[in-house]
Length: 392
Image (tube, rainbow, N blue to C red; front, side, top):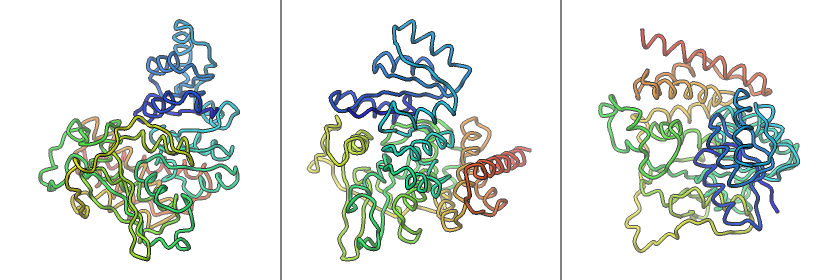
């Protein structure tokens, strides 16, 4: 029995993971569940899945969670805070950790799982964008394995021999990440000037949280995935491309030196990647409707508009700059997106804030988590200063 910790259980990735786990009670058990602040949703999941441990990130809500679980007759341990999340990820109550906490908040628990030698199913791209070298070192030290859950990276994983080989030795020429183009594909900058948060959050293919939906609309999400692909597969920036594919049926491609191009296809449902990662190297039923090529119509591909969607260009810029530039990029973006969702920043100004922070804070070497956290704080402070200037 594979005991699974689902960190970020109340989000969309968590829901998809729990759906797959519930389909295979003979193979998987959701033994640890966590949430940020949504006590009611976490308690409801615990009543359904009966884990051994429930963790709420906000310590102020631990008592409420315990009371709700007791009222529902759920007997499980209750804990709270970042330290508790990291301890749960590294502890003996799980074999596999699904890292689905959104944003930089997922870094500590992701590193803890890697150091403890767990099978790490990475859905929190910010962890590897912030601390890619540190995460890979933690995996080497702990002896665990990382399997990407992002649909694009899982697709590349499936198209590579052995999952994560030496690309040059394997004859790989290029990794091609596909992008739906988000809700504003084909629009000009002028047409995006008055975009609202609700419009930005209406993704044409995927159901995601609001922050990730905005990142998809700006193409920053794809930029973060480019940085993630660099760390996951050892590919330089020059060997990673993005292709806009609005049907979202081809999830990514790998081009080889002999001219072969391998692609992974499937209906746009995260349960495919999650089921693959949970059971790898086996295959299990995911609940996803099979893809019918006879009815899916034409498949389109095109180049991204880097002038209109500046965030993708900035992500490539940060990757080429190296060091902690990706962490600076991510921190600035989180602040800018939060301001946009609050109605305090225009949509197009998200990229302007990120670009300004990258210019203000030249990259430094990634040394340890403490220095990264400090730089993350500097980037957020710089982003807030730019926001104040833009609002004055």
